[in-house]
Image 1 (cartoon, helix red, strand yellow):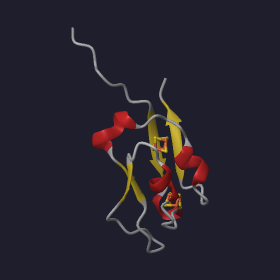
Image 2: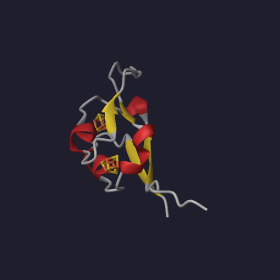
Image 3: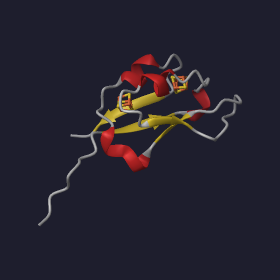
Amino acid sequence: MTQKKYERKAVVKILEDRCKGCWYCVNYCPTKVLVISDKMNAKGYHPPEFREDKEHVCIACHLCELYCPDFAIFVEELK
Ligand code: SF4
Ligand code: SF4
C-alpha cells in the first residue's frame, strides 16, 4: 500500500460576503495558499480564495484568521 506523501492540515472557510478586500490574509499567509479571487462579493470586493490544488501546503497557522478584521475567514484544523 502506498502512503500519502502529504496530509491536509486544515480546512479554511471563507465567508465571502463579510470580506472587505483588504487582502491581509493573502499577504500574510506564509505559504501563499490564499489568493485574490476573480469573484466579486455583495459589497463589491474580491474575496480571497483557498487554492484547493495546493491544500496540503497550508500549515494551519491561523494567521489568516487572526489578521482578518472582519471575521471572514476561519481555520478548522484536521486531526
Ligand atoms: S483579511 Fe478578511 S477582509 Fe481582508 S481580504 Fe482576507 S477575508 Fe477579506
Ligand atoms: S492557516 Fe496559515 S497557511 Fe493556512 S491559509 Fe491561513 S495563513 Fe495560510
